[in-house]
Length: 85
Ligand code: FES
Image (cartoon, rainbow, N blue to C red):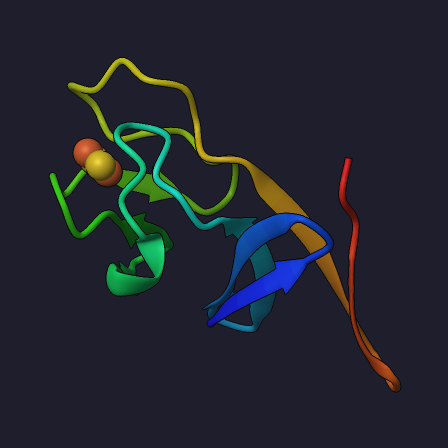
């Protein structure tokens, strides 16, 4: 689910029981990752099909660009709290 937090365009992702946030633009060429899909603990870019490990943001083998930025999300009684750095 795409969300905007301050000036950041992020993506909320559910990976099993875990909820996390990622940057929304793919670090390769900026594709909108909200149009991708998740599966097996990975987020797949819709443009060139690189995928990102949702534990650490690392990109699938064969690609040389930087990892995807991940942000912790805390599920609280009053909503979701994101830790941005
Ligand atoms: S734009 Fe995402 S892999 Fe190329």
